[in-house]
Length: 495
Ligand SMILES: Nc1nc2c(ncn2[C@@H]2O[C@H](COP(=O)(O)OP(=O)(O)O)[C@@H](O)[C@H]2O)c(=O)[nH]1
Ligand SMILES: [Mg+2]
Image (cartoon, rainbow, N blue to C red; front, side, top):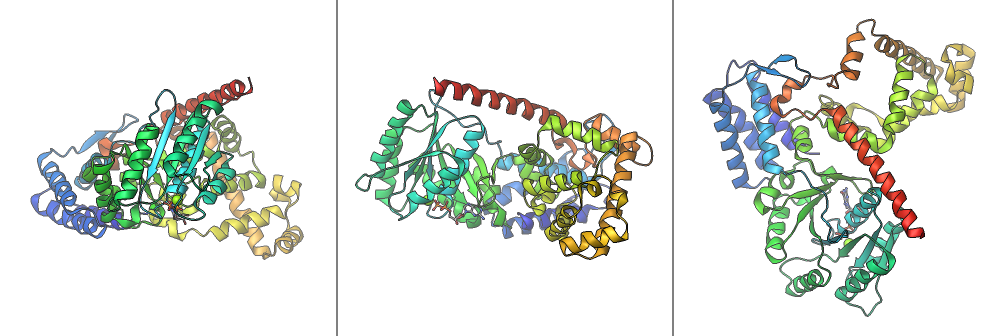
């Protein structure tokens, strides 16, 4: 994702390594790398020009602080190269922002009209948003308003089934406007509190199709008109969105297929060219691959610094924070077996592909290709062929047991012993961290106590991510609230 841009900024940073200050000469040279990658990423030309000018004037105009105070209060040294990257980070956030705000509602009802070209991912997004709303404790209805493509309604019905969300399908002789009107009437009678209209693909060049969606819009008067764009279309996606906004005013944009987008031109320029904010990103075909748009997350990923907040969000989606804390304490006391390892591997797998997870870790982005998901499967199969006792206390596994385990999972006994060795090292490492002794003693304090991150925050200067622990707490509270409102809603519906 966005590799082209990451390479450009990395080259720029490399050029400034060892520089004593930021000068006209070295800044221009670094910006040449940035410029090349922005153009290669298919970013709108005017946007590129503007961005470079701003970064340049700030780089040369600002006094370079050689020391900054990080979030834990410590003074850290900052190099001119880091200062330059911090400016780029702020300007990128400015360019792509604001953060995708919450979906608006009208009289408590969130109603979303989705529009866009054919094949950009509207129907998939409809399913993803329905799933998202359901997780927020809402009760959504999907509306199949694409009567042009055969099987369009079936596609939505299948998606709806998979997430247990009702889908409104009209009859053959109904127009999309009729279907939407009828669906809207179900809100009142069936107590839905959100509704998503999935429409047919259309371009502004087709006058009939445009007047149809304008009619749908006046009929159901949505609280959000969202335009779905395929990020792979680069600059064309930006132009299409701009033209559409002139015919039917948009509240927000959703960029899809970002998982396959090495260039990122649309993500970077679309807000600035259209004036319409990005609300969500779609990063895969399955319904869980929807992210609320956070410009700082994308900026960090572009700058090769990972996206810690995004990682925490992914992690929270699959893990209960209170339980995780208890677990962490137990693990740090060195009290764990192979089953715990297996559980953690599965958590990682649930979070998404290893490549994706690593892409969000600072400094690990570049390593993503080196991790082999097959290796994980191997470890899993070995642990699964151990007995309960062996999993709990792997030290009982001698040669004959290792041979038996190897046979059971179709691996060599060397695979088995090497896993046990690594496991033992890990257990020692964890208990050292937990006890505060040994070389890692300090680490446990830093991670648990101050909420600071175990990486060089000075890299991101003033634009450091928010305190991750506080963010985690806030999300946890939000999650509890959602759970409660889900319960309340269920009760009300039963009455
Ligand atoms: N890789 C990837 N594929 C996607 C994404 N969103 C949609 N697709 C795929 O794009 C194709 C078209 O999607 P669809 O929702 O039917 O588009 P629509 O014509 O706009 O309704 C389908 O094969 C989807 O699985 C995404 O974020 N990433
Ligand atoms: Mg569709």
